Amino acid sequence: MTNEMTLHCNKFIQTFETVIKTPKKSKSDVFYTGVDLGTACIVLVVLDSDYQPVAGAYQYANVVRDGMVVDYVGAVDIVRELKEELEKKLGTTLVYAAASLPPGTDDLDGGAIKNVVQSAGFELTNVLDEPTAANQLLGLTDGAVVDIGGGTTGIAILENGKVVKVADEATGGTHLSLVIAGNYKFNFEQAEKYKRNETHHDELLLVVKPVIQKISSIISNQVKGYKVNDIYLVGGTACLKGIEKIIEKETGIKTIKPINPMFVTPIGIALSCTDQVM
Image 1 (cartoon, rainbow, N blue to C red):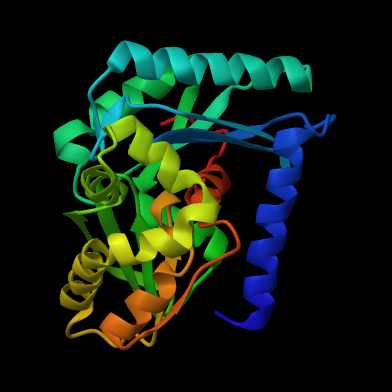
Image 2: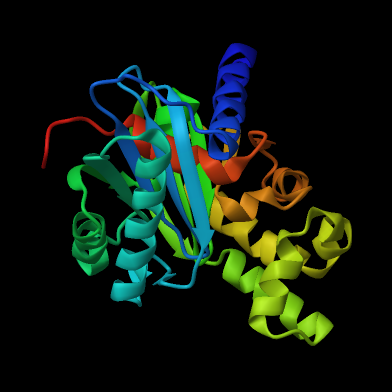
C-alpha cells in the first residue's frame, strides 16, 4: 500500500468515526449501508450517493459464531434497531444494504446472514467475503488482506489487482478471550471487556502471544507459494496494540494495519453496495 493509499484509508476511517458521533444529514437521493455481522460486534456504515460516510453505529453482541448466525431473532432485532436509530438521525429511510461472510462459509450459513439483513428491512444488493470487502477500502493490488475476526482469520491474496485466493481458518478474538479468562480467572464476558480496554494491551500481548503465533502460522501456511510482500491487518482483533509486530516477526512479512482496523471491513462492505437488488 502506498503512503497515499494509507492516508486515504485512514482519513476515510477518521471521517466515519466522526459521523458515528455526529451524523451528517445529506440531501442524497440514495444511501448505501454496509452491514457487518461480526462475532463480537455488529457494525452499520451508511454512505451517501457519492460513497462518503454520513452515519454509523455499532453494538457488541453474541448472535454470531464463526460466521454462523446462532441467534437469528437477536441478530435481526439488533440490525433493525441500529437501522431505525440511523434513519431517525438522518431523517431518511435506509433501503439498500450489502453484507459479508467469512470466506468459504456461504454454503454453510450464507442464507441466514442474507435473511437477517432482509428481515431487518433492507433490500440486499451484494454479499462478498470479508477480506475482499476490506479491500474495497484498502485498494490493494498486491499482498494479503488478513481479517482477524472473533472466531476466524480470513485471508485474501491479491496479485495484479485480482483476488487469487481466499481462505478462512478457526482462531481469532474468541480464542484470545478464552486465554485471558483462564489467565485472570475471568468469565468470558469479563475477558472480552478487559481485552477491549487499550490500557491493558501491553500486558495482554504477553498473555495471548501463543494465540497470535497460531494466527501467524495460519497466515504463513495460506500465503505459501504466493508472492506476498505485505500483509494488511483488519478486523476487531487486529485492534490489539502490537499484534502487527508479532505477526511480522513470526511470518517474516511486512505487516501493516490502519488506524482502526475494526471499521475497515464494514466500510468496504458499504462501498460495495449499489441500488441494484440481488
